[in-house]
Amino acid sequence: MADKEFPPIHEEALNIAKAVGRVAQAAITRTKIKVSKEVQELRITICKTSCCGNYEENDGRPRCRECGCYLKYKTKLTTETCPLGLWKKEETKDGSV
Ligand code: SF4
Image (cartoon, rainbow, N blue to C red):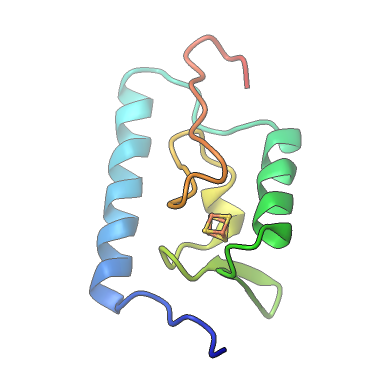
């Protein structure tokens, strides 16, 4: 089976713009933006080991073929979530992540 293609560039750009908007919203509401190292590692492990087939590592820069995002950043942000629901957004207003 052929590897899934990354989304078209305009879709990737839109996904990045939406992510930036969510981070800005978190900053405005003083919600924690970064998850703990443990949570990020768990997310990366889920990406690497799940059967989604969307994990792609190129020159040490893992990406998700579903949304086109760079997982180093996506997994670090409380505002982000797996597009297939394999890991969730973290609610961190109380700093619990
Ligand atoms: S974010 Fe979700 S769909 Fe993308 S690689 Fe990770 S587990 Fe797979």
